[in-house]
Length: 376
Ligand code: HEC
Ligand code: HEC
Image: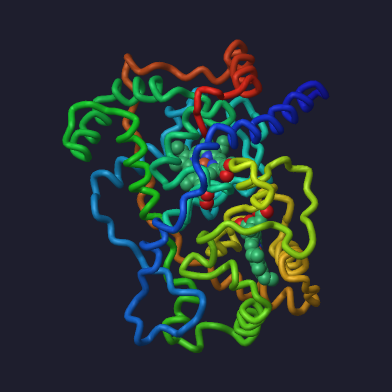
């Protein structure tokens, strides 16, 4: 990669964040309505009274819609290049993330921010680090049209789907309509995402009364997590996801990443650097950490959290104990058959991964202001 390309990527990086935030400036982060679902716990009698609650498996309500949503989630033909699907950046073989500091989008563009996991994302109070989408359905249309991600348009994505008879049939059985529109696409993807819940972690077994489920170290780690005050922000069934909090309560967080969190949307000083508290479910799998992806290891993240959020300097042993506890939050990963996607037909628009003119256009659009209200 030559210097010029690097410079351009960096430019794109800075601007994309600012623009993404502006696009959604209308959306004050939604408040707790979504959290209701998350509060479901098993028979309260046997569950330990702790600030973290067990995660329950979900029952699929609408099989046809979920199956369709799964296909769409894995279908790279919803991107301009024909190469990038939701699963490219939220890889369900890797904890629902890409394990990159920031994601790679269309034309190898460097993304502005770390990709959060889609696992258990239905429990989030709102979506994105700054909460600019109120729920999964609102979120799902964004990446398809984001020039830095899948770089398509909703119209072209619909053209692709409409050209494939098997998709037509599946939309019909899921929605009882002969048409295909973007609202259905978002609805189906969100229905699939609702199923991406990871129950039966070691910690859940312990919460539900199996005292032998945790080792002494893991239990020590949990006590430290609770007593140090981590649970003030990381609590509930998702061990996070329920509120927006300042990154750097006691000491400021130093980063080159220009994202300002909720403050980028509201332009209020008190919101600067407030980010959605990430879920710590499956955190063992979702490295690297923080919105800028700067913490490479869990030890790193725990150390930073202790110091910046709580003014505590953990010893290496304390950090190791907390990390051992955090690893007990890895749950049963979603199990399903890899979807086999219906083939394109002769009428299906073909992908153009290497079109130079498109590349330049994408850059311009990215830099020039997505003033047309498209969010990521
Ligand atoms: C090029 C990489 C990329 C692709 C492709 C992509 N995403 Fe994302 N996704 C991200 C990044 C980066 C964020 C965080 C953006 C932010 O918060 O500003 C994100 C955020 C999300 C979130 C919010 C999670 C949370 O905890 O706030 C969900 C849900 C999500 N994406 C689902 C999807 C779906 C569904 C698709 C396919 C339609 C998709 N993503 C395609 C990179 C990607
Ligand atoms: C004041 C609220 C608050 C407290 C207290 C707090 N956290 Fe956090 N935590 C956050 C926020 C906000 C983030 C996201 C910060 C960012 O990305 O810039 C975060 C991120 C993390 C992450 C990274 C997760 C990811 O996917 O990127 C880990 C791990 C974590 N916290 C563990 C802890 C531990 C351990 C403690 C106690 C020592 C703790 N937190 C205390 C609010 C808090």
